[in-house]
Amino acid sequence: MMGDYGEIFEEEMGRSTVFKDQSKLSPDYVPGKLLHRDEEFREFTRYFRPVLESGASQRVLITGSVGVGKTALARRFGRELESAGKKRGVNMTYAHVNCRKQGTAPMVIRKIASNFPISVPRRGFSPQEILDHVIHFLQKKDSYLTVTLDELDHFVEQNGPDLLYSLTRPFEESGGPNRMSIIATSFSPNFLDILDEATRSTFMHNRIDLNTYNAGQILDILNQRVKLAFKPDTVRGDSVDLISKIASRRGDARFALELLWYAGRVASEGEVEKVSPNQVRRAKSKIHPEVRREVLMDLGEHELIYLLALSRRLKISDEAYATGESVSNAYRVVCEEYGENPLENAELRSFVQKMEGLGLIDVEPSGRKEESRDRDLSISDAPLELMEGVIEKILQRRHGSGDRGGR
Image (cartoon, rainbow, N blue to C red; front, side):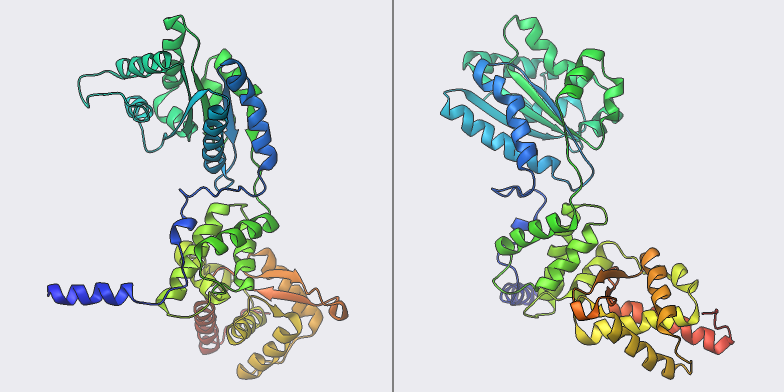
């Protein structure tokens, strides 16, 4: 049996893959260049200039929804802050604490202390005593600390605001300068409402709001990571474009990278040479399955036939998008299959508008001058074979029962 497992292991290790370095798609990876965040980085630098020039203490709040780069921006800035301090003869340490993982004040303070060469027993020391050791080290070495409290809003909601006070009070009581600066990340600034006026005021004045990424920005981020994580020429451009369109609905780069990674896995498991749009759709269905049968059940007969035609057209072409004209031609073929008379193009255009509004299909201008009224159509939320199968079953039931569901 041991030999069998060894063979399995070696077989999998020898399997061809589209990946060069999957770690470059991890949420923990911070690239050397953060795309579309230069202005926010510049704003960060302005806030921290007094820290390097005069040893001042600073507090900055980063807000934004999931996947807009709050953690990456803080980590990248922290790395640069340490480097800038070294150039100027300032001993600067950056510490990053995920407050969702380090869910209590003692855990947060121990995590901060782990960044310094100080001996802290696992038991017997209170959080305050541990923090005193950190303060003593900073004073003795004439050093400064910048700590990011990542997802601080979640921590404050669970534990209250005492952590912030416990981090700053010891410096005040020591009589020396406050050598600790704090960066906080939060989904929204609402958690500040339960803080005291002075702390709230400081964070509100030093606040960086990260907007969601648009489709073009997500596309840039994906292309950057494709070069780092995949072997050359193993990810099709239309696949990356499709991922950017899907992820831009919520402006979430983290979701886009997760989708890219999973599509790469699907391709590698199938031992194909390139990541195709349909592998992106399969990845999407695994991460966030969205074949909404109840929505499909409410569609009329010809709407379902048109959606079935689009599914088949995309599957045959293995492209991210199909032209409106090619889908109309496929629709007429499916109408013949189900014994229906095709509707006029004006009615088909109304189908497209309705299904786009329902989130069943994606619509883009064709980009072809000679076809200015044409549209390119896609399905991004589900594997095409799954969508096709669900629609066929609905149509079969309707034809079997005599219920055609209208148009």
